Image (cartoon, rainbow, N blue to C red; front, top):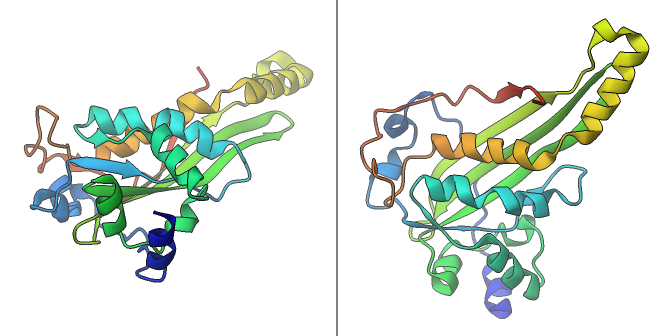
Length: 227
């Protein structure tokens, strides 16, 4: 497989997230309502643009369930990740130039998902703090090599301290809340929100009936309470 991947990398380049209008799912993502609509999904190792080295590993814990819940067969991320690691591939940029047909030939997947971790940070400035997780998604057909769906989402959890407790109390509570906030549930919420914007897959009871459902692609950022 390694030789095939190395040869294939000379071919097409992954397209970036194209801007599409808000509206209904069918108007925003028309390719997902054609014969090209996938049944199975392979998620390749994440492209990590954040400063957190462990972000891709934590992403693997949170990315499968939201998309599986929406009716897709998601190939086990941990197993796929191990296969890629054996081939010397540990980061999504290493497979960016590979034609998507390679994933169909070697894994039998109808589609391949590229996830870019844009932010995975904890920020703390005196009495103000937050935890931010941002991701971009591109789903491509392994048959036509076209982009079927793209989306970006960011969630910010405000961990600022309670100013009514006084400046010292606010500083302490901000530091504790920021340090204690777990990335995993935040990342899960990002993936869950993104999956909600994806047209429902074959194994969902409403498959094919959600074309008129609204989708707002302008809502790039969601704010959550740490509780």
